[in-house]
Amino acid sequence: MAPRSEPGLGANRLSGPLEARAIAAAVVGRVLRSGAYSNVLVQKASGHLSPQDRARAKALVFGVLRRLEAIDEAIEAGAQRRVDALDAEVVDRLRVSTFEILYSELATPISVSAGVDLVRDGAPRATGLANATLRRISHMDRPVADGLVLPDWLIDRLTSEWGMEQTHSFARASADEPERIVRIRSGGTAGYAGIEGALAAEPGPLPEGAVVQDAASIAAGNVVEAAPGMKVLDMAAAPGGKTLHLIDQVGAGGVVVALDRHQRRVMDGARRVPGARWVVADGTAPPFPKGSFERILLDAPCSGLGTLRRRPEIRFRVNQADVVALATIQHRMLEVAFDLLAPGGRLVYSVCTVTPEETVEVSKDFDLEPAHLPGLIWGNGRLLAPHVTSTDGMFVAVHQA
Image 1 (cartoon, helix red, strand yellow):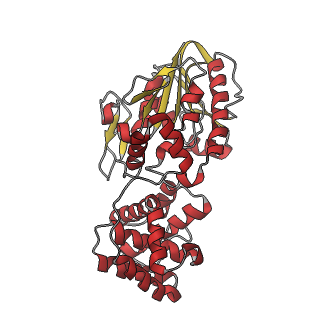
Image 2 (tube, helix red, strand yellow):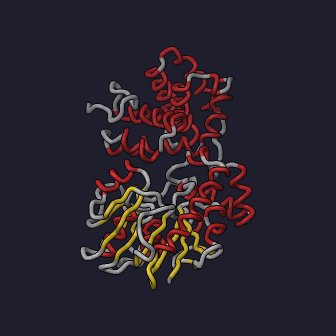
Image 3 (tube, rainbow, N blue to C red):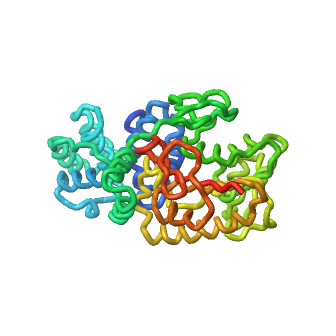
């Protein structure tokens, strides 16, 4: 068996489905206690598995994170003690097994047996606890799968803007597994959700000339409408997905300057997208003269709450104070972006979030209008969202000088 890709994730002596479960449990623990991003870590940790077991590990990680509150409640009832009174790694393995018992199509006796084996492998002394806990859980009624449990402050903010029905629809859609969407680099294809160049792709090899990218991100890049030979600024560029999109628009005769304030992220971006001119600088004070760029994309740093389908753990990490602080930065970056735009140029403001503070309350102070895209008009921008367009949440507004 090939060695696992990340120390501490998985167990070499396990094989097949059990190794996938062990990796999933370790990833869940890292995400919840160390601030790792689920989508990045599970891909790295499961890379050596077979395609089937890699898919299993991914499904288990996201399943647990999406249903964490109900899963922990079931564990506490089954173990007859609080989860914080149990060993953390044992809890992670119980979470994976509880998800399989309550939410998967796997036969209950198999789920229980596999769960006991999983705990035995990591903590032999907890085997009896696992057996008793999982058997009690197996006799519980299966919960009705509902939407993500959103933090109270976010529910209040969304309800005040959208109403309760649309807020609930957002929570439900944010718990769904997203389709794999790719961008056809040559463009010209009316695709997924009516977004040009976006295509739903089955697991397996990518279609020729395609890169993986969510449809909402593709939409934001499309709206820039850069032409061959133009000089374009990607104002918060890392990791570089939209940067590559801009390069495809301007062609060999154009220039795309990719800005980010984190040196490591710039180095990573330059490796992924070497065709851009990468610059380490703060987007609130970039080192460029006024009127330098014919097109500007400000895909601003944000809370990321529109990406809950892919990173459900964000709901545990972001609070209202974070959102307010980010909105201040976004406002300042928009001011700078307007200064950098050349006469007759085009500026796109986008954020992959849904909070009013980072979207309509930032954009209202600027000469922006809704992008010509699918979705809902919200203030002077356009909202794409999982419950509206089956995409990530994205707010997009445009200025045409």
